[in-house]
Amino acid sequence: MPQESLDIKLLPATAAADTVTMKQLAELINMVYASAEKGLWLDGADRTTVDEVTELTRAGQIAVARLGDRIVGSVRVRLLDSGEGEFGILAADPDLRGTGIGRELVLFAERTCRDLGVGAMQLELLVPREWKHPSKEFLDSWYTRLGYRVIRTGTIDETYPALEPLLATPCDFLTYRKDLT
Image (tube, rainbow, N blue to C red):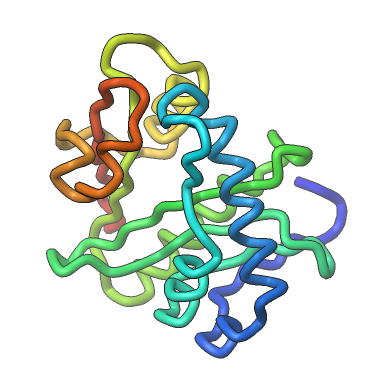
């Protein structure tokens, strides 16, 4: 963990009006995913947009990690209709990789859901079907160490049909789950 204290908080809905922060978040997420999902998407496909980050912030679903005034990570936290919590769009500054920011963001998401009485947490991971992607192999191992287990293998078009045409390679869409009780 960096020497400066890491501060993680859900952004208030009013933060959606802060266009500078919304742009910084979208840029961080897209930078992280451009590397972590290299080869999965057609050229020019971004993970998110400023408008999407703004809407998720307005919905109270975006948490931000800061070191001082610097944004160094973010995660989406939400409750699913099925009653589980879910985290996604996890991003940590690549310059600080290995310092625990990602782990702290996951723990924050779990704690947030547990405090709401949620008994299980899930996440989704897109993985290439026909080849091994180093980042996806790392994430599978990391999520497993954190206590998550694959409970379903599907395709992205089942949940996000508009994204399927943007894939550059066939992919599986894995759902992981962890008991929070």
